Image (cartoon, rainbow, N blue to C red; front, side, top):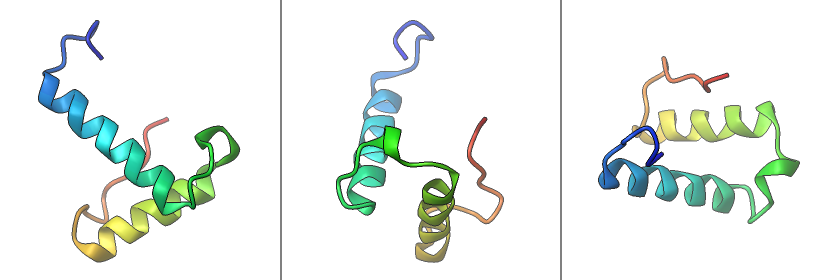
Length: 59
């Protein structure tokens, strides 16, 4: 992220989001998760009002 010159605040937000994703799935390693876990996480964020229905995982 620093190579792309993202702001430190953006870096902090991304790190928080990754930790939140891992905790949401019971502290499993991200390598053991796939598209279904990402979809479930994004649906939860949508229901909670933290993301819009248009939010999609990037490929």
